[in-house]
Length: 378
Image 1 (cartoon, rainbow, N blue to C red):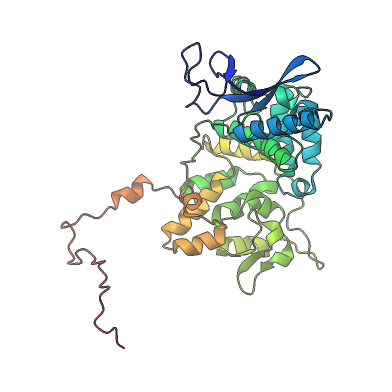
Image 2: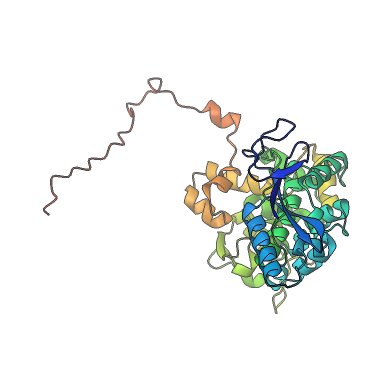
């Protein structure tokens, strides 16, 4: 009875004290090793795969030792009693998961992984190799755009899958997460495309009437697609010149105030407004095919709707607005996320100032602060 270590290279299992496997691979230093528990029950040797957590293996071994000492039946490992399909149904039924705004996306991500790994697979048999196989399969497939899914899309799938396993451990549904940490694929999904005023006007001219207003608002105001689609007349304050969104309408669940651009205000004032208020736009869903045709007709290449939000934030920066002010309007909490939306163009680079080459005598700015103030007694 004891704990065994599985070599990640040859899959041979040996004692916990073994440092080097028979194949020559070091099993003590690597993070990808799996732990097993070996014991005897009714004269038969049994082995249970625990996963990558040594603590979980020790806990399971103590549980078996206690049961044998007290003459009780050894309870079956929880990981072996639950399949991925059953775990998915349990996880999606949790109230804390169902109340998330991204519930539909979580469901799709889990379906992407589990449908390719197998719903009937017991959690105890889950290996990191299943995740690698899933990634390779997804990268070989094509999405509705005719291209393979991006690494960021696959990372979201595996992240939600891992979150499900961790939540099951938290609720004592599983003994441990059998795959531990998952190394994410390298992402490079930063969008580096903003429109010039001429390009935007061309896009607007090619838009159909049912999406023209949405595109106009997205270009001038730092709002997300769903925030624009669900915009209500009660949220628009023409007197003060603001759009006021409640916490239930934003991604980070914090209300925010967005100043109205004059062109957006003129457009909204020209729309018929019901006396009882309600939705500004009748369509609940974004007509992507209409937008794709407009982008193609305008000759803009790879330019999606969310890129308009990049244009809005970048234009606010070029207008000389303070970064903190823009973040308040866009809803960004961190500078890292905010910087992803700002693109320094070559036209801006041409305006680079050089020390000693300008006609003024501004010189450099002295940023030194004297911290040894002589007026400490004041």
